[in-house]
Length: 274
Ligand SMILES: Cc1cc2nc3c(=O)[nH]c(=O)nc-3n(C[C@H](O)[C@H](O)[C@H](O)COP(=O)(O)OP(=O)(O)OC[C@H]3O[C@@H](n4cnc5c(N)ncnc54)[C@H](O)[C@@H]3O)c2cc1C
Ligand code: FES
Image 1: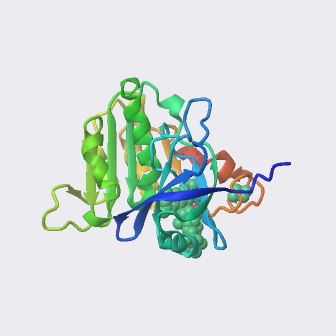
Image 2: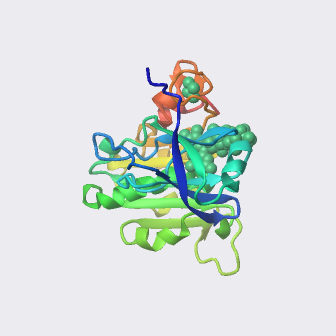
């Protein structure tokens, strides 16, 4: 019987500094492309994979590359602890371990025909970046599309090389807490800029990834705009181990974040895990 916890070996083919503490790691399988699902995607944006270093463990990350790309998968990894420190020490050509994709991802079918607002902060953007690639590839299937993205300072904004390309298809609002003298974007928290978004509240879906206080503030502001908690989808970052519903590291009551999530509508998670 196949061992579901056994990872594949993959090779690091590109490493790039995205910010002072976040690296882009591009991984490739040695002899094959990544398999695709029924929709022709290597993963659904918002799903996660377990990326690791032999001897040090594995951690969940949301892929950031286009889900239509089967030749490689990109991850934006922030150096915060044991596994991520060792991932940051690797070099091009080194081997990593990879399992997944796991979980549900953002509700792509429900998004069809709707205005889409994506809101994220700091290192929450990798899964949103892959969602942006999906939306741009299928641009005609959606109404207005906005990204509101916040970071501590301009240097902490990730995927800066992609903004000009993204801006050809979607509206981008960038905001920082501490602007540099040459900063031309906005300042302050992401929810303070939701008022700039011109969408039809009844036909809008919001996708977010970020810390609990950010999503709680967003839910309140969205409510004032007539966008309900059921139209607001958040990715929950919980400690995970197996990723496949066996270890209970990610559970809250009967809910398994690795199986039932990590993406939930806000009415499902409000006040439950914060
Ligand atoms: C679905 C999902 C998607 C994620 N996507 C990304 C991503 O794209 N890029 C990225 O950089 N990080 C992402 N994370 C967070 C990432 O998994 C953690 O930063 C990582 O597990 C830390 O591992 P470590 O061994 O380096 O840290 P540890 O040594 O285990 O811990 C260091 C610190 O990180 C905290 N931490 C550990 N695990 C998690 C976790 N799962 N979630 C939140 N905090 C944690 C600990 O409480 C501690 O403060 C994601 C997490 C989940 C659940
Ligand atoms: S991570 Fe093991 S049950 Fe969810």
